[in-house]
Length: 221
Image 1 (cartoon, rainbow, N blue to C red):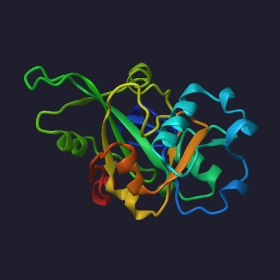
Image 2 (image 1 turned 90 degrees about the vertical axis):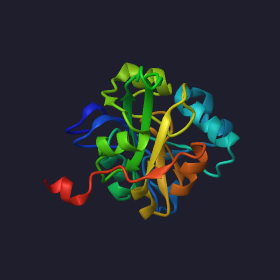
Image 3 (image 1 turned 90 degrees about the horizontal axis):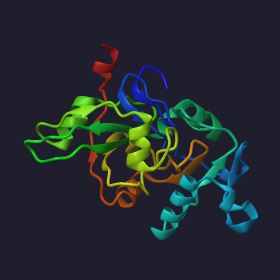
């Protein structure tokens, strides 16, 4: 990713502080025919040979009754553009995961914690709007690779919207609802899974939907 302060994950984010991951591409049909992508199904695909993070997301999706199994890309898609190219969709259909470090608030009694913002691949997260959504006095800081791994259990480039190692405060950007289907990171830069924007609310345990991206006028400034 370009122009970020923090660490980038599977879908590119520019001009933000935090960490981006990937999550989603929608409006696709005939997925099994897409070049460079393999569907995971039982022993035939040897799921035990795939990375732990990918298997953890796969198990969590199954437990939650999600109808679409994760898929393993034959390339590593660490930016929104790479993911879009691999899947044959627009960048906006990539749901990227951006992680911030919420600084501890001694007066408010809130400990340091990870904040996950899931947004559209063609948008930039507005840190001030994120802080406002989290409550008065919230201050956000840079999240490095070690912090992301410890908080989510995933490495940079594969932060999924669920199955985290520790509780993570999550916000879902309203811009994702422009699309009927999206794709999210599945615990590894090569892993993705299909879902609808509304599925994010259910899979994240009811995370709020909010306006947390830079508006067009601000983006041009």
